[in-house]
Image (tube, rainbow, N blue to C red; front, side, top):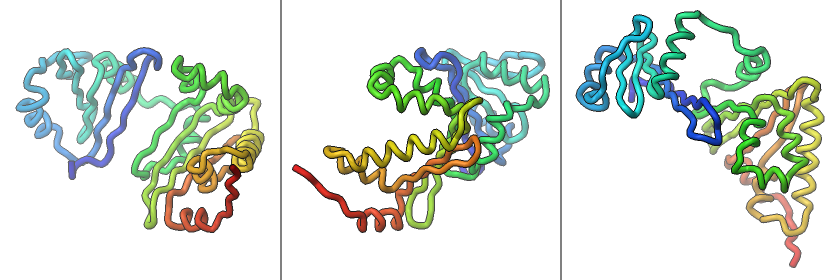
Length: 234
């Protein structure tokens, strides 16, 4: 594990069904040594096959493929084949909106993720929530893509979210709605005290088509929360 720099998880397919997984492990390890080690453990029951001159180790649970030095892909065999196809085709440009969003994401964060809110909110499991929060759901669906970055600081945890609005939508309008909703919830009688505390430690800003949110679980944020006056009504 000391030779591993990063681990990236991907999921493809219908989110309401069983998505196909793919894991990319990248570092400074030697592919040959890793293969020899895997043959004695994980890959001992795997069989070798060739796809477009590339070797894939696979069994009923998935497959392994080394696309380049110190890099291994593990997951669904069909996704491995698509990775080989993409590698053969050469580098392909990302959609401009996604590239600009990822350029604003701290790749050195302990954990970060990117997803489309519309896809997540479209899950059958969230149908009831969508119906009960129609205005909020409609606003979140105006965000084309959202990235989340979790960073460790000297005094706690910082979570940054950056989203880019879909064509025809303004990041400021989304920011204004979310800020107003936060204010309304904080002033609403009967709001759960823990939820209210989380809102106090959060913030929302915007710039052009981008909307940004942050949550600070840090000593400084807790001190600010401590100094925040709340009224509890029976």
